[in-house]
Image: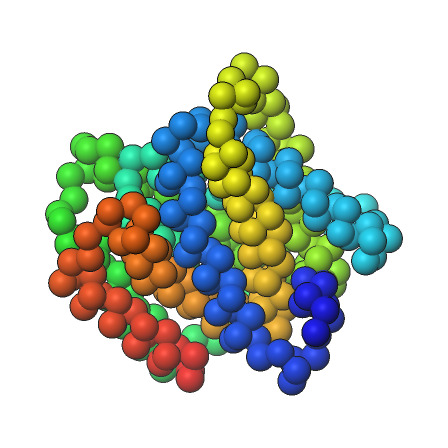
Length: 301
């Protein structure tokens, strides 16, 4: 099956299960935390955010031009896309990369796993989606698992580690708002055009901050492995990952899509164990079991 049919959101639901798509998306997202943590050792987060958004925006615009002959966004929706871009790209991506400098890749993934808690609340008030008792139990179980892992080593609010966690959490809230507010646009324009418009607007909004830092940064000193990481974040995460995520968001409830973010801590921790010399603790194992159980309950809600 041609992969572009997945990217443009034109595959019949019966042919490709939306949960399979979300599973692939979470594998990409899990790798994002490892790659970003590694690249940030040598690349400033402002520069990394700028390169990521520009490359992703250009790639998506080219794809949209081929598939949809341009964005064709109604003028009345420009402001909504600008807000979506500010939340989902400029704030979300920069705050995540900035905060990740001070905390671990696995912990960054855990914080993004809290997305369903915020999505369910915002979807209830903004999209009028109903919160069933079973969904509440599933989310509570998953969040309990996340909490066990977050507090496994204690929290010192004065430490850079804790501050990094809080910065990322603000990025998570921004990402959640972009998900909830973006669903009507996805239903109207489709996953490809919505993701493209969001990324292009996001690149333009971040350009005043990122361009100067990028021009003064010694890009010539970056090794191929660094550029490989930038391309992974831009093409793998911001293009393919976003398109798969928004494709699913256009098919099922926002709360059910968001709960898949709970898989990221498990994926990120396993990858960190291999590539970043991360140590998996008993608390992490217990929390992961509860998190996965919460996902299963919520999906049946």
